[in-house]
Image 1 (cartoon, rainbow, N blue to C red):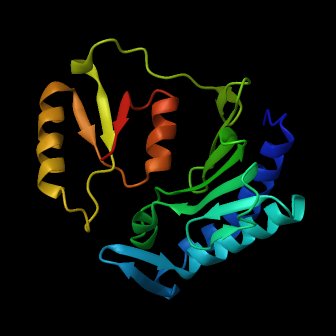
Image 2: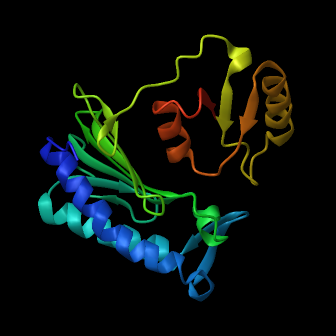
Length: 209
């Protein structure tokens, strides 16, 4: 891996360590404890376990850095200059239904600007990473967006509306309108992987309301 950035190396180690636990949990989904955060929005013991491993690793490297995480909220919240941003399982619904399409997502923010980050798909063993000024990669290969020029040829991906959305009808109407003007539309259930796939040219565009 071309992980020349010290921050990327820290993120990589946290991803790899947490992925071992996550893969094990995915193999034992029926045994996981699952609770509801709201309509159609769930959190499992795997979310919390993965998040704890990541946070422990990041704090070990920089105890004073801020952390913003989906489940734990903010840690060292007074430090806004150096902050890790974490989603332990992006695609939780896929994960809980045994669908092997989810990712660990960690970014590093410095002075209100994202400097680097990793999206790791532990099932397919695909590591998407980018470091400002040094390009974006999938494992050891540099990635680039699609070269398609015409929207009618584009394969577009979307997250679609959440169950609690008050604008479902408007979003579905927009979905239909978009689908009429492109090659096709997909909804895979992991926004992090959707955008990583756009970055490497698998999808031609992404939109989300």
